[in-house]
Image 1 (cartoon, rainbow, N blue to C red):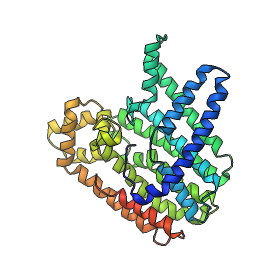
Image 2: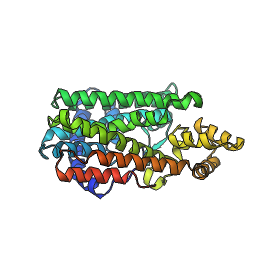
Image 3: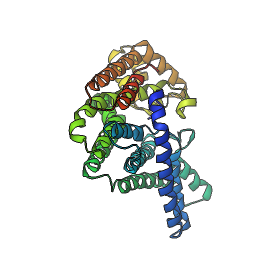
Image 4: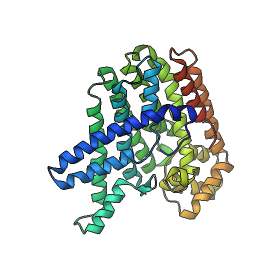
Length: 356
């Protein structure tokens, strides 16, 4: 879940939406920060942590896609329900990231300490009793859960179709998180398919889900579901695979995370799977095995990066992204959407196919 360039069209489309979503998130959380401070002053700590997690950066891609689907299907751009849905999507995303950081033991996100790291540091500096790590991870679990609870509350006026789409999308993300965790912990030969992990952990709730949400909110889920599914599944998978490329090769200045962070954490992505099928040299295979187990030394990260390039794994994943993007664009050809929305979605799919 790093940084994928989105293109001018979707960036411009999302600028106003992002501000409106951020304002709504700030309004809801600041209100409860004050309310729970009356219960116990320390209560503000977890609300502040959630404010940091959900307002600490990001492109607001999910609310933008939901808004594009909603207005493209005929909905009014000024309808406040789509802002509520957009805020719920960002809270779902923030909760997943907070929990993901615990599972990956990531110390930094977007250039700042992750939630569990920050509260672990607070535990140590304050001289609290118990285990520093356990405290930090416990607080992060609560912060992630609060994000999910707030998301549910914001959906109360969205209607049953949109609520059902959101529910399905959230469960998909949870199953994907488990499969990702299992892949990192279990033997490589028995690991779940990395494409399945990418599709469920991120792809479904990043592209397909928000588009279906927008259609459901507009009352057009029945006729637009096939189009948005045919577009969203390949586009969402391409987005996640491109994110994997950035996680392995990206510039820390743009990702906010150390270079090669996914390799260091032992994420068993399609990149490693492709390389594993092609490498025969015992030393190289051992290097890949340690990358998959999260056991790389710092100086070995560049060695794995070069290996991924040399055996063609990077080029193979980039080619897969391009093929998926082409499938997504083709799915929009006959879509009954307003032209501007169709053009922006086409631009978005095209952008995720551009090599890193």
